Image 1 (cartoon, rainbow, N blue to C red):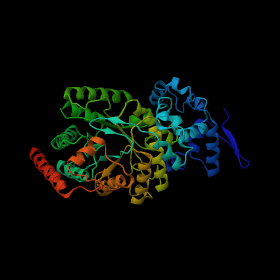
Image 2 (cartoon, rainbow, N blue to C red; image 1 turned 30 degrees about the vertical axis):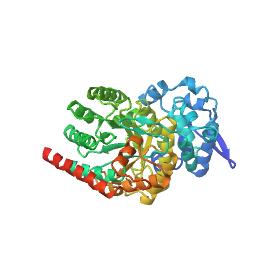
Image 3 (cartoon, rainbow, N blue to C red; image 1 turned 180 degrees about the vertical axis):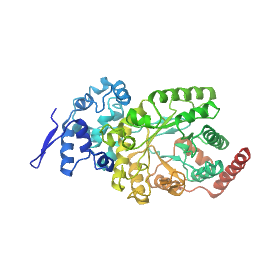
Image 4 (cartoon, rainbow, N blue to C red; image 1 turned 90 degrees about the vertical axis):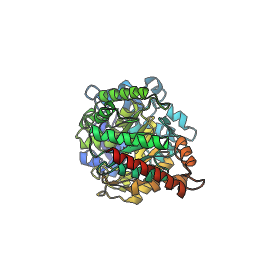
Amino acid sequence: MTLATTVRSERFVFEDLRDVFAKANEEKSGDRLAGIAAASERERVAAKRVLAGLTLAEIVDRPLIDPDEDDVSRLIVDTHDRLAFASIAGMTVGEFREYLLDDEVDGPAIAALKGAITPEVAAAVAKLLSNKDLVLAASKVRVVTRCRNTLGERGVLGVRLQPNHPSDDLGGILLSAADGLLFGCGDAVLGVNPVTDSVASTSAILHALDRLIETLAIPTQACCLAHISTQLGALEAGAPVDLLFQSVAGTEAANASFGVSLALLREGRERVLEHHATRDVAWAGRQVMYFETGQGSALSAEAHHGVDQLTLEARAYGVARAFDPFLVNSVVGFIGPEYLRDERQMIRAGLEDHFMGKLLGLPMGVDVCYTNHTAADQNSADNLLLLLAAAGVNFVIGVPCSDDVMLNYQSVSFHDAAGVRALLGLRAAPEFQAWLEERGLVRAGSRLADARAGRQLVERIGTLIETEAARS
């Protein structure tokens, strides 16, 4: 296997596949921080040329991280569908790119290959696609999942309603939830990041969200995004757990830095499935996991093994895929400018993440977000939001007024998400959309709630807030 090429009389030789992958990546401040990025645009082009000429089999047969030293690599090898892979093994990465973009190749044809495509193959082809190509290829693929409702169908843009509060005040959480519901948000999940990672706080939040869902008969699911062990402790204490959440990364060492292992994820999933069986709920299914990822997490944990952050992100999706999740999302700009420096890098990463997740068969969402010390602003978020909606993203995250006052970062507002639905003719999950219409919260041709229906919803949630205050 030759890892060398000449560009305008300049000869470029690459040490190994990891070197080719890193230098073929679009510019990322994280790769530069790791010391593995291309030194020039000419070297980047050379690396892309070499990568385009490699066969998919050459990539699959040469793991970037030794499976005997890393359980994520071992998981990727053990779950690879070699029989399905045989049909594409001889394609070069460049040919595979052309295949995905071919007008004659539709979503079901691409989806049928999900078990054949390894994370490294997904990363390789992503490096050869333009932003428009990432949107076009991803838009072909739909990944439909079911919990209390159905997400991922064509024409649906889900929204995770994120009613975080800086002191985990249940009244404040429920009030923010009311704000989101009035804009038609919350079909993906009512998901709270707790300030205090304790069983008591997690349990209180889960109970409050469950009472909100039951009181208003909302066809959606709840989640408290504490550490997986804390959520399992809350489950053991009697809290209702719809979805079990955990942040995951693309190497064993990076996952260990999160305090998680593949074994713990397996145990957690089985315990939630058992819990759903004991709750005897009509909506109980097999898709009970929710994962978050983000480019740069392995580098920040000093657990990247010299592999570029795009490829490591794809490997995180390899972890997620093994657990048949209901939701997966990249928090694309959350880690900061050390990894994605500005709007251009943030937009590129968001489109890459969504494309790779869909290619690997995941119900992919994106938190369109940035920190205030990044060279980005709300226009940057708007640009990425529109591109992702065109690409068929399963869901985005919505926070009050675009400003998460607990996590101190900027994301998409509830009215931003509603506006994009209106602009592109998208809707909420079908069960949730029907609930909105029955409640009078959505009128035909309008993204605004009926004023009377809105007041009634707020009054009912106000009563619930008073009840929660009395409980505490």
